[in-house]
Image 1 (cartoon, rainbow, N blue to C red):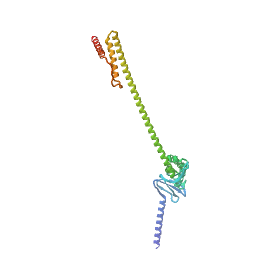
Image 2: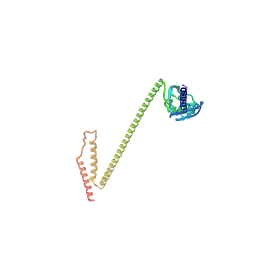
Image 3: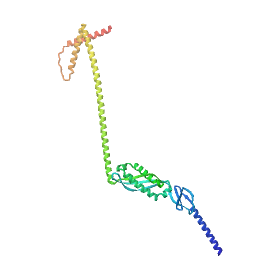
Image 4: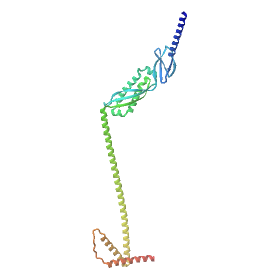
Length: 314
């Protein structure tokens, strides 16, 4: 029996030592997953930070203090009512992106990091949006985001945190302000439509006036050209008349009676043509000496023959 008890005692001791060794190994060997960092405390005091991988601790003396996630994290900021500079109430909703860059500071410089960042973001949203008018805050979200990022990132640096982005998801004014803004927008659109219509009518009138002006200029140029041609024709006719008169005068000076008959017959026939072509005369009774007219025509024929004979002699 004593042997049996001795064997049992020795077996129990071996098992105890085995279990104790396993516990020591578990306490000594630590495997940190990717994306995390763990702090190590020796007798309650921070000594070092464990990066991802396999690490060994001194059992009993060392222990893991805090397990910090080093990946970028999204933090939703609770909606809150904010009063703008012009005393308008808006509901602000935002989101913050942050990343822990120093695990020791994040573990020992602040208690409840997420709550601290949430409260910090809310207070700065009230401060930044409250310094703007309603219209300015609704139309300048990028400016608000930039100001919030600068302020919150600076305040979170002592906590070992890098704030990467702060985004305003929504700024919702009350329903009465929304209705007023809708009426204002409708009035602005109506105003723009009327301005565009007036501009179109103005442009149309300008183009029409320019077209009429161009037409008048072209018409005036046509009249000027016609007058110039008419004057030139009259000038040539006058020159021809003067030349004919000179020729008749020279013929008279030479004693040619037929030239006088030609001149008289020409004027006589022109007078008859003018009287006959008058629109106010329907029937014209004029005493006519046919023998004088025939004599004049005969004189014209003699003059033509004489001129042709002179040309042949030349």
